[in-house]
Image (cartoon, rainbow, N blue to C red; front, side, top):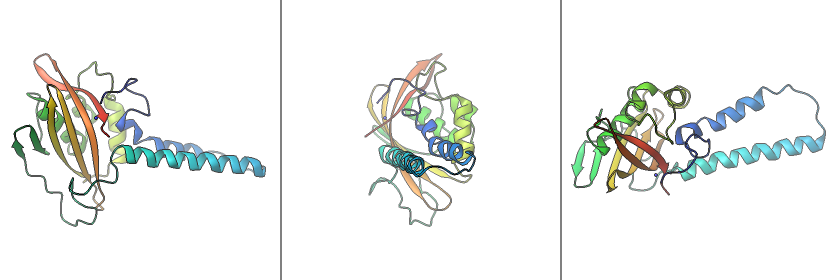
Length: 203
């Protein structure tokens, strides 16, 4: 994904975006019930429809429907196959990763997110001064609230330039739903380690 300004804003942070539709629904549910004029009811209905449209747009922007040939289909009943491979500029896998290279840092971040389910562990693969990646607390909230235990993942990383990578993240949930998220990831060097700097949507 390409870097965006305002790193922690709701419209640019892929992790925070996961919380938006549920936050809106909760806020509406907490409103006390009362009789409203017809005009007010129509206005509220229009707002709800607008929020639904925004939620759909977020999924589309992030590659939510998946694309033919980019990952397993939703109808697949087997576990997500993700053999670790490296072929030139392309790295595929879902292993623990490390901080010796950009692809390994990407693998490490996603492993911490999906397998360890730890926001703290994920942030260990992020530059402390990153302007566009959420805090450990926000990441943990997304994991706990939005990612079912047992969700599998597979990452395809293609190096485009020094410290810049196109990433196709395939997510397969226990019910079989599979989604491919397209990202551009930028890395930096910090204290002898390669860590993530920006994760941005790739269109």
